[in-house]
Length: 307
Image 1 (cartoon, rainbow, N blue to C red):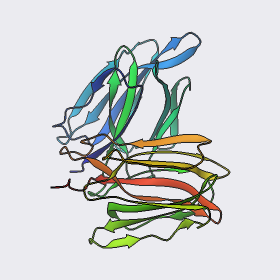
Image 2 (spheres, rainbow, N blue to C red; image 1 turned 90 degrees about the horizontal axis):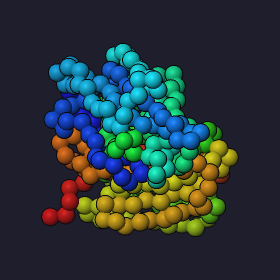
Image 3 (cartoon, rainbow, N blue to C red; image 1 turned 60 degrees about the vertical axis):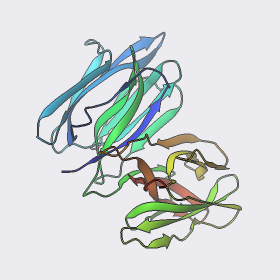
Image 4 (tube, helix red, strand yellow; image 1 turned 120 degrees about the horizontal axis):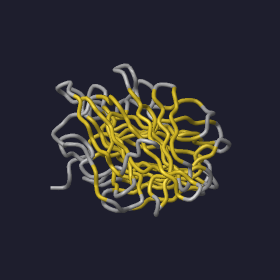
């Protein structure tokens, strides 16, 4: 039975926490209902409800979180073959979630009006899919995060975010991130890291991009892991900036220059089924002769805390 990992939430920092039953193991989505309302001339997301199928192959109804207006809502029916492999949207501090876009297989569903900072959780086709949600709400939807289904107990791949050029770069299956090195100036010129693989071996990657610009390296101490990434990119330069935050509240960066489209990877405590914390354990992406074009993350189990 496959387990799930929580990614997010992307939020406006208020509203009541919403989640699924922790004892129920989510396996796939059956329906998603999104409702929207109007704030002056702009639409925003006022509610969400969904049905997922649990480990007993039984449907479980969740929500509504916020409100469902029958006149301003849409229900998406999903088959066993359908995969929700991208959730994106926008939010602001007062309205909460202002827009949502869901991509199921290759079909896109858009709701609300884009306003405020953007967020996204793209998943490589065939390497995972969204099977449930969590977040916060009051009379509207204030925050949204996703449950991503693991494949064969392996870390979940999320992303990549960045430009469309360059060549793919990837690693063997990681279990722990040990250090990160960034070369930067006005953008991220080069990126490398050291990780521990499934055999317990420590592996240092080649530099993705170039070794020009300022070089910065940070190491992760015992029991320390990256639980938040904040970054930006554009189609021309690729990844423009990177900032990493750890569970010890250490902040590394920002490296490069914040410009273009922003993306973030926040991981909550108890992100992995069984109440384990989730952690960034490795990276994948695309690189070119001029720098780091795109970056994605592997999310897996956090290392054991210090004794």
